Length: 240
Ligand code: MN
Image 1 (cartoon, rainbow, N blue to C red):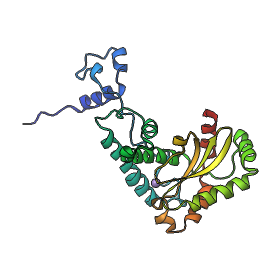
Image 2 (image 1 turned 90 degrees about the horizontal axis):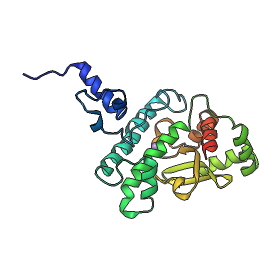
Image 3 (image 1 turned 90 degrees about the vertical axis):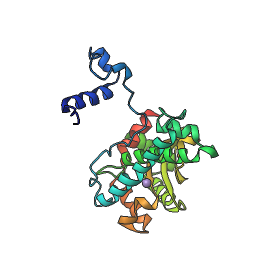
Image 4 (image 1 turned 45 degrees about the vertical axis):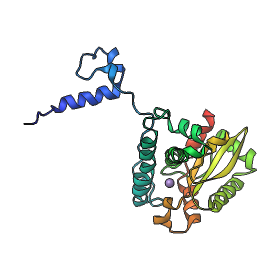
């Protein structure tokens, strides 16, 4: 007969694993799972969406989200975890992994998966329900200084997203003391060129095909007008 583990013990073990070394300080070191042996939380993980999967409707459907977040994004995270297991990259963050493996032909697979994991986390935060509009404050000033006007920025960002040939990303980045709009192919990320990403739009077909089919321009316009999260961009600027 199988011995049943009382539910309370399972919860306590999960708590201890999550709490890591903290439980020692709390005087809980005598519980069955020794605190000193608890593994630290993983540095790379499949992050929760910052909103419900239908929050961005009608511009991004929950059906798109279920595939894009639930399958594509999750797939990149799972693959990264598999590829770094038992290597010197285990324990590093997605950002550290993508920086360390950029431009190394023998590390292409791990770079692609770690960078796509980072890019998707960043993309979800680049959007919000009730977004769109224009930046304010310091970011507005910098947009005007860098592009001449918000209208110029918008036109350049739209064209950049539209003309990325094949899969990739359109980004607003800080490069030195100015903003730039750049495009990257496949998994590439401006961090590897010393630029600081402020916002991104995913222009892989998996990002828009269910909702917009081949009409990438309609998708990009919808995101710029209704979902772009300027508060997130302003936070990234203030941290740079
Ligand atoms: Mn994607």
